[in-house]
Length: 63
Image (cartoon, rainbow, N blue to C red):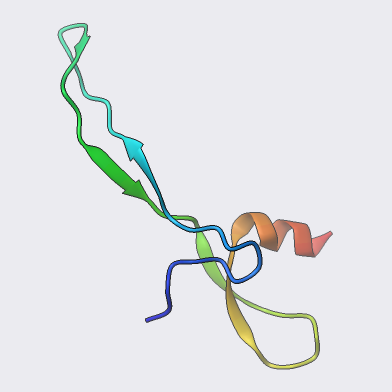
């Protein structure tokens, strides 16, 4: 399995808070790890190399 890091912009996972609202107040919450939206994409260099890229980089490469 490939690592969960974008090979173009080096974006990786980050921590965020999961907020749970109960009776108008926020409960003590736990941290949740969020991963970038990585997808396999072929590079335009002519080689048949596939890399994991985040969708932000894929959108920028299409322009």
